[in-house]
Image (cartoon, rainbow, N blue to C red; front, top):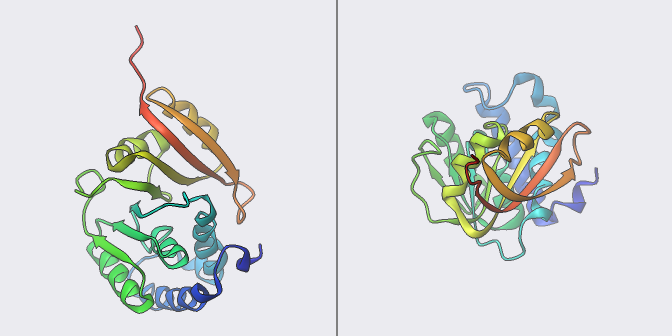
Length: 200
């Protein structure tokens, strides 16, 4: 994948600085698998940045749940300049996110909180990566989503089963996009999400 197709030139050096910081902190706390370090740029940074073209043009505020090492939320803050609320319950990872924001100048606010208890203004976009199956993810995301907002969730091979399960609880418009970094992954863009009425 051509990185310049999704990463503005002004953001590239900031992302490399971010990657180096991950490698340093990863020796002390488990941000990513050690096996992933050699493929950090492709597997995590580009994988997160590919969500940027799917954001609404008027995205003013984004909430990222279970931010961990900053994927995808902090990467999207760097690439798009959109303000991002990073929600991460682990205090050590939250400390890393604050240092990464300081180093890169990313427009983020870090919230050390569980996703189900965080108090935030409703966002035009909610993202999460490898946090939970889709039905549970929507229960976390919808209370934080503006009425006309969208959810962006990267998903793996089980995406069809997750969508089937989610549709038992939710009505939604679903768009699916092939991942540009993994042949087995799919990017979901969900909108017009509302609870399904119980049957019977």
